[in-house]
Length: 496
Ligand SMILES: *Cc1c(COP(=O)(O)O)cnc(C)c1O
Image 1 (cartoon, rainbow, N blue to C red):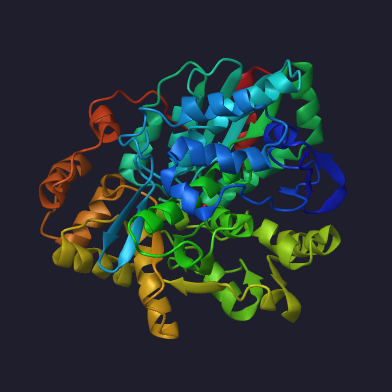
Image 2: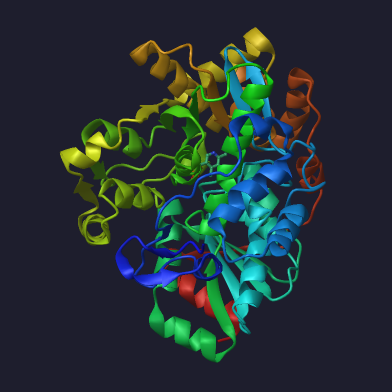
């Protein structure tokens, strides 16, 4: 049976999976959601015998029902290969009473690789299936990690161009270096004088600009999105929560049917939403701990039922979570509003107009499986050092925010027995300065790459290829623009 996708803001606009992947956003500015979340067609016990690629197929075929078996398996095999430094693709490590699900073994050493190594293949396949002749222009706003992972995924993929906007002063030096050294004839990287939300808003505006879409089409181009709102990113992220459950079974942490908790360092709400979808598919999950940094708009939302973006924006040591508008939350709002697009559209209109909305008590009750917590800058740094001193394990700042949130969850609920997965979203090598500052501020080096060598010594882990490569790579992208000039930059690139 074909799964039908439609807009969170309007039930009339429907699409197949491949159409939804191609479009990214719906034409009314909403997000594509499936009519219902499909069930996993594999017994939990049997998951332990499956490879990552096999689990990926079992999960994704339920969502991407208009892909043939061959198409989907080709996409999976092209994505999850030797670009990852482990055959397991995602690795579950028990450290200090929690299970760290390491999602950073891909090409750019952050969890965005999990989805962005397959998205280009899903997109090109979707274009072919739908007889698209236009060249596809991927337009992306990044808080740091998406940009590089998307650039790496799309570089030199025929029939595509990729344009990435990032906040010039809002990403780590290593993140910036990773992006501005990107090779490929179809890659464009632009710093904006604004924060991530400015970049995201600018990109969303271009997506919903019908006039621009027409000019593009007349010139043989069409936009698509690699941002985490694309279901082609969301669906591959469900896979590793299924894999994590299989790992806990294999490691004897639980028996088939017993629940795990998940703790997710959250920004745009994509990763944690994927875990929620995993539960709907049949994976036993008890609580979803939504971890925020000092930009704790989601913590406040879970506490009060009020989503309020009108607040000060902080640049933190976990920049990929420095977000005030969590785009994927819209899919959750839609669901807890009883799959009612009209009500969802009203909340989103209020968010655009007033920067806030308040959900109903009935909707709030639907969120009882979620636990919101946040980690301050200091708590995060202390946690990195604590786990390093105790176990010799070095985690990155985003993962540490999640570890702090897990401590708070345990203290608040007394639940320290349920095996708990902490989504470990970046390699410490990506945020070396903050990580080394936390371990010992005496490591005061001018250059972040010196710190890489220090980290290598203290963590006794190999320096990832992704870091070695950019040490000496030349800067290939140096454009910086005002937020208001983003559209002009795109037109310049496309020559329209
Ligand atoms: C993107 C990112 C996050 C946030 O994930 P969302 O899906 O946006 O909630 C957390 N940590 C790291 C390292 C990231 O790159």
